[in-house]
Amino acid sequence: MNILVTGASGSFGKQLIPALMKRENVKIRVLEHNSPVELPDIERTPGALGDIDSLMTATSGIDTVVHLGALTHSPNGEDYFKVNAEGTENLISACVRNKVTRFLYMSSGAAHPVGGAYSESKLKAEHSVKESGLQWTILRPREVYGTGGKEGINQLIRWVRKYPVIPVVGNGRTSMSPVFFDDVISATTEAVFQAGASGNSYELAGPEYMTYASLVDRLSAYFGVSRMKLFLPVFFMRGVAWFFKAVKVNALVPDQIPRLLSAKPSAKNFKIPLLNFDPRKLEEGLELCLSRED
Image (cartoon, rainbow, N blue to C red; front, side, top):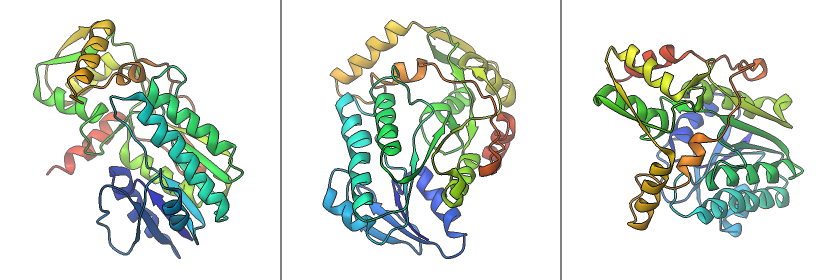
């Protein structure tokens, strides 16, 4: 199987590609954009989601595309649509013209019509994937932790370990279903090779439903620390985000607020036998995270 991976320089790509290459008769090509992909035994081709000619070259001779590439943080809402929605449409167009068979799209559990520009752009991209005529699969991971990144739950984990006061946007009742990174990688690998996954969207959620406030408490208990929650009004945080945008500081961008607060389904039927997806509970995932620090 000849596989093209976009977004290969990110944390998902760096872990997914080695998992894919463990399977027999697999060749990997990656679309290199801004960052080089430092992985062995892969083919690299330069390109961008906005450059259709480079996408035609990248998809030539490819059987399956795994589309991880996305813009996740920008102060300008239109940038999300240009990269996430229009870029996906460009990639689909190249796939159709080059007779690519399968298309796996890494969406987000935050894809929601009122979740802000990022969420809306991912939802629009999902629609394009479903209408592509390709054999498609869509994955929607929820709040992923264990990537080593500096945002989302990964950031919250660092805060709880380090600071006595933890900021909470709104009333803290935002729904969460934290899912361990390794479980998402494993399910994604299976989705690439399972023909039965075509034509389906899968919510990759952790096995527990909790609020943001209760997540802070769970993390505090796990690390054996006492943390005070500082509840910050939504209107105040929106003002802070717009101020950061005005002074060109990307610590907090405006769409992150509605993205966090948008309604998300609870973690029902979280096991997906076809993808061998049986996600770990929070403390089990945290134990593995800590073991890698040793």
